[in-house]
Image 1 (tube, one colour):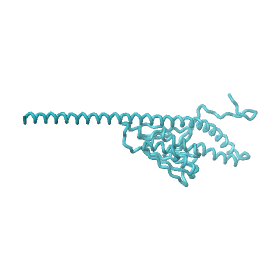
Image 2 (tube, one colour):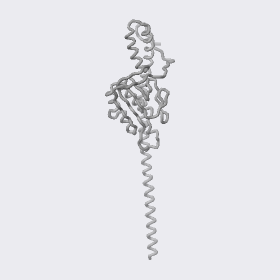
Image 3 (cartoon, one colour):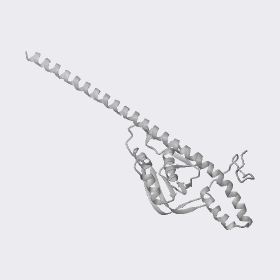
Image 4 (cartoon, rainbow, N blue to C red):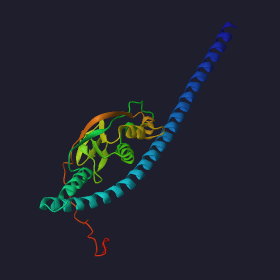
Length: 253
């Protein structure tokens, strides 16, 4: 009897161990499924957010590029007239200065906001490190919001932003005006500080959206900012100014 009792105890112990192991494996499998589901949902949400931001920026850039083409033509005309000493040259000179600011061809200073963006420090639950890095669309969404809020001049890491400026990312760096930069990204925007600050920090605004991904965005109002002129060249090979017709309208080819 003692021997039989001992064998029975060993059998019960073995069954108990098997149950514990099976329970542990089931729990681990369930946790893996949950994490995979969360990662898929997170990736889908991130992709949708970036696509929406990209579509908005493309629409804005197309309109601004047309405006810069027109301003470049007017700028050259006014330079010639101001240099010739024609009547009204002072008025032309003043308008020339405004055009140079708009075209990004001169240094400018004034009040505005400073925006600093840094990569996320959150734990990686999606398995894709790129989900937690700052992308070109993230930067463009900030620039787009600043333009909509009336920013008169913008720079990114010291690069003057024009309508023709490219902002695109390659892995962990961003190229702007042909130069590559890594985070942190510092944006200067000249304009009304209160308006620019409110546009970025409003509820469900661009800062809120980026913060959901753990991306650090610091917005600071400034009394005086200096934004340098665009240091590259703008060469239009195909776009030409449209000369007015005899009726005072614009000629159409």
